[in-house]
Image (cartoon, rainbow, N blue to C red):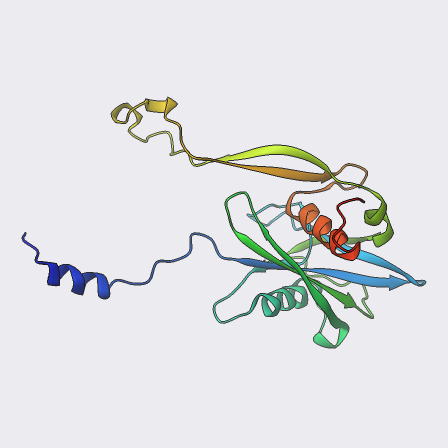
Length: 207
């Protein structure tokens, strides 16, 4: 088969736009007032979920086509906690984090009023709260991790230079953990909390 430059140009112009490897996501940090003190609401993800079952998380999920990150975060909160828009007052954007594979996660904070402990069992195993003051006075510990772009086992290693010892790309990242929390708060949830506290303290890294 023989191609001319114009043939290649036409083929590339008609090609579909490249798709993102992973959807971007958005989470919302819900704040509930109890007896004059603010508490952060957390979820334990349903054990039936395929992705991170049983993990401690903030309400959130993937951003659908046509949604802004904030719209996605609010939709996920409504679906997971079975609340309505009138109960939510958005306080602002916390910032954007990146997962170990590079996925962007947008985080927002909102006050949640008149919450009655409702949630969707299909997505949430249980909910609980911890005082905001705890995170203002306790540091997260940090552990080093790495994400390796390594092919599956039936990859033809014997036909590339270096074989299984080929230096595949490695992305280094840190995993924050709040060791004094039960259940343990770590990973992306802890990362969002750290950024939130830093914003509250005016950018100071000292907690």
